[in-house]
Image 1 (cartoon, rainbow, N blue to C red):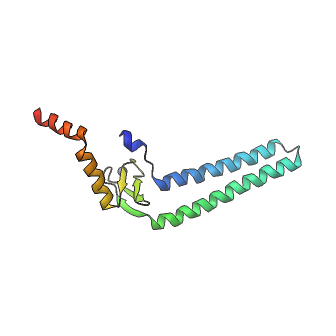
Image 2: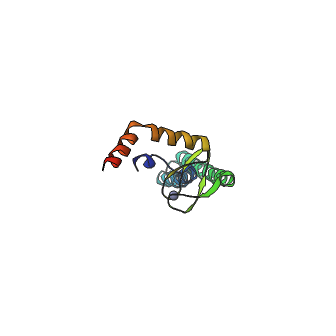
Image 3: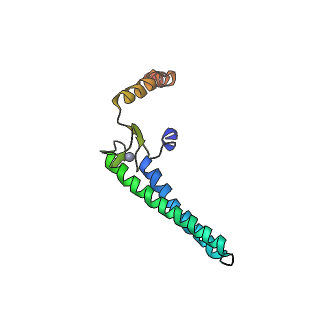
Length: 128
Ligand SMILES: [Zn+2]
């Protein structure tokens, strides 16, 4: 579980980023209202806020494009449909690290099975 916490689904990550951009945009525009006595400062805040929101729309559009390229699979861990981006990605629901690369999967398993800790575990299980 400790390892799984370091992983986060890429599409979810970008979506969170786009959403936070919208909030930052509105926050900056709110600052513009607060300094409405200084016209040029207000205009700058409003433009910055608008840029954040426009950029967030672009990011959302980009997520749409990425989603069509992502591979949809059923997560073997929580059995919910999830989208994978790239070679290694995490499940959207349970953050289970998943890979589409069979070679990578093999290497990971080999490493785990060859590690001393894992062998020790096996031996301890056998002795019980
Ligand atoms: Zn899952």
